Length: 297
Length: 240
Image (cartoon, rainbow over all chains, first blue to last red):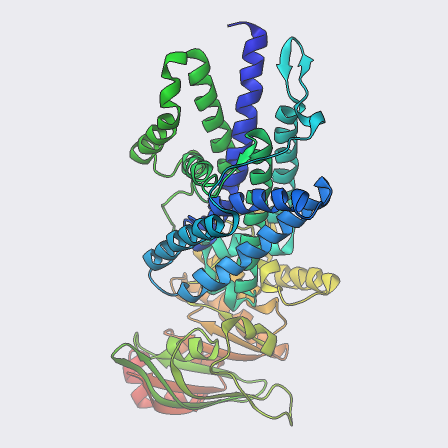
């Protein structure tokens, strides 16, 4: 393989991995706080992409404004989802909330089929994002560089919120001990709503970038990225934000590089992710950066 | 300051608190003494809003002459806003956050940054060992240090009433004495203290008033000093 070709694969992997990581953050944050796998997370990604699609076509909004509207809209949806489907089940057994999450996922997908129809729709890619440029011999689209860049900025912002702000401190506290945090006067439900808002906003951002990268949207487009990102979150250690990002990047590299070096295996690309999930669950269920299960009494 | 009338707590089929009435006057140290399962923690947790289905009256009069406010039925997150703070049983330190962060969480409802910084210093003066460990994670502290942190965290919300649930549990005797000295000090600073203890001798020594609980009911009450001399109490709780 030539260096140029390798670089091309490298940046493709970086793009895909960034998207996985960004989506995985939503899974990991909600899991960290509620011990709930929010299966509807991938569908928020789909809705985020649709919001931009209709924003730019139906309402003729300029791209940047459509993106902002879509992200805010998705964040609001995330909060509503928590309020309607998860909050009433806060004290119920965990399995109830999980089933509710599956229901929300089917509901959003079916709703999208009814409202947007099941037909895949082509997404218009702005010219400057996809016109090929050459860097060090590698032929790249600016989009391939933009996605990791935007991801890095979003992750940095998120880490700042979680580790250097008051609501972030509350999120960290809730993840360990909800009752004690509540007793200290923290409005726990509001902080959980904020967590859903942030996770959903990141899902929408990744959905929009996903639609630009693979320029077609349909009501089930969130399912597979959702599964993959979930695997990335487990791989990195569910509950850990850094783990989600690194898990996402590694999964992106595994998928792209295996296909690049072993083209014969390209048909099995999706299988790699699931094999990885099985292996991680068997060998190291807490993932790369997962919380240790041992606790001091 | 706090009056409890006919408090009942049920857990499933178990009647853990059976019509307890208490009075906690402003500025006093009141203690609840009793064996495991006597209902002490249930009472304190009911006041804090942590027990669903507690019945009866928990009336708070925050300032002299105020209309009493019913606390039962209010969510736990309102407790500190009513001027009550709890150092819970088992300390419940957040193990992955630093000592300083634990203290900051205790001051969640306050916006005065300078005041919070000043109160963190106040806690460090009270417990110098916490200052040395301020960047250490809560989970790495010893049991005694965690207890100090739990008490310090409760003080961070500037409460009028401090509730301490088993602060001496599992501590070495020298630390028990230190904790009780601090409790007395906190009371001298003008805070009302509700103390739940199994260490009856230490608790009665500093209490203005004591209630003795057995299987969910008050069986005996009176000033702490009198209780220390009471033959029944001596026999049951102080080893004769």
